[in-house]
Image (cartoon, rainbow, N blue to C red; front, side, top):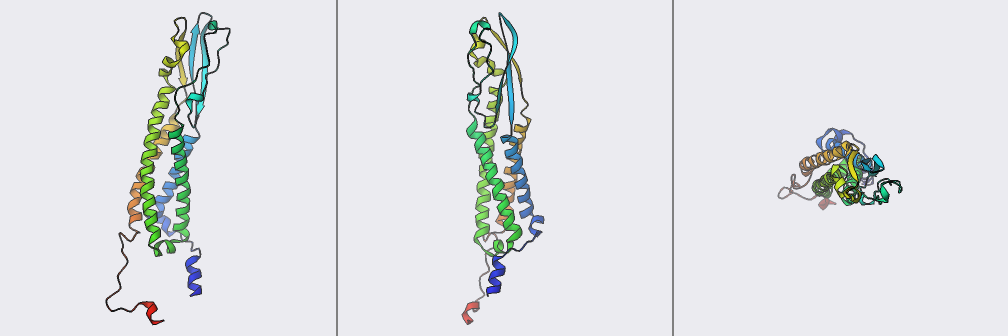
Length: 242
């Protein structure tokens, strides 16, 4: 009995589950979660306007922004106070999108960690995973919850990204007080490409598809799909003879 107990509690390395849908999809989920939080959390860029008045023409003023996208704390570079009759004042970008961005990135990091733990369980302790009825059920519940949270977090981040593009695009000129004065004029300059942020949204929805699809393979491991066999009528339990 002691030898059996040691075997059941010990590590049994087996790469076979990685070749099965259960493990292979988990590897994809692990990789895709990395792309999701890296493409969003690692972003930095800038936007600019060109201002003109009676003593300056097309002076470029830039504002640098990035994750977590608290744009209302980002200032444009100051214009020399001697220019434009000192009508330029400190000007911020508009909007705070940190809650959606941080929720998306933090959730993706937690998914990354969970996938690593699940892969260790599948590869090293599959005998415990399939031998205990509770572990597959816990895995199934977590899988369904993660799929739902991918939908919520990605949708929120996609909406925030749309608003970020508006707040840093040509429309921001109308929110700058300096540009509304009759003697001044402003033109939108340029804004950094947000391709990596678009990619983060794509990976968010790909993660949703992976987790929702994987729910079926996790469900097949639970007692809901494979209920334990009932003992045959008249059979004697194994411990009865001891």
